[in-house]
Length: 315
Picture (tube, rainbow, N blue to C red):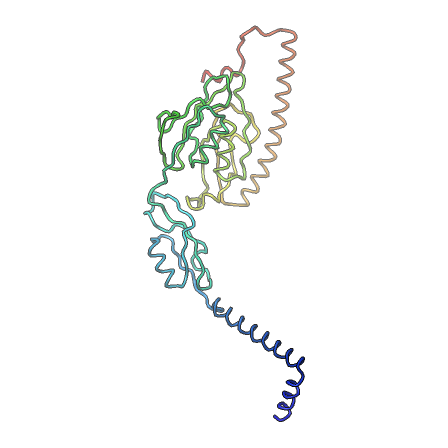
């Protein structure tokens, strides 16, 4: 004990050593204080099991969350007619997950009614512009109807629920509703190329098909796909396949899956088929152009003669 006291006295007489010792002691104290504070703030070692909030009203879910020292935050909302409004449809993290107290659980709830949006006036614009305006508004294309006109793929008229839309029309529709577009097509320009949609989610596949002047045919989902996980599904089959020639306004059927292996297998096949179809299409177009050139050189076509594309308007 006397040795420690003597050492302490000598240390105090050495100002440099004394100051260094004080600094070291302060640093150690601050480190310990920070560690203890962190332990308390994060409740180190404390865990909570996230309840399954699915099917519970949001108010009840909030009460349960508070009892478990958890926070609830509405991240998204959907409108599913089969469920009551305000019901929790989905959550992240999922029920049964171990988390620390104070963790935020993000939930998707069912809306009481579908959101209403104004139908934009898109007549007079290109099909691509019209499609983009409708998608931005939260609407879709119900059907593309082609009519003879000098401007191919320009919107002549639009209608919603059988009602013609004019520049002065102020009409609201449920988000996700479809608008019918009447689009022009010039004689001799009634063809398009089917885009490759395998691997895309449904909204992107639809958008690409509309942009090419094609309608959506049957949309089929594999077993297990519902409104909650539909966004995760991807197209794995389409008919006609990508890169094939088709008439404007034709329908393309789609099938979607959540199975990643199935998607990978079909995507490989679809890409091979698309490359083959593209080569065949280019070859056919070249042969047709050569044939027309030879026919024109040897036997000029009469003025106003019909073309194969004129049949498009007789349907």
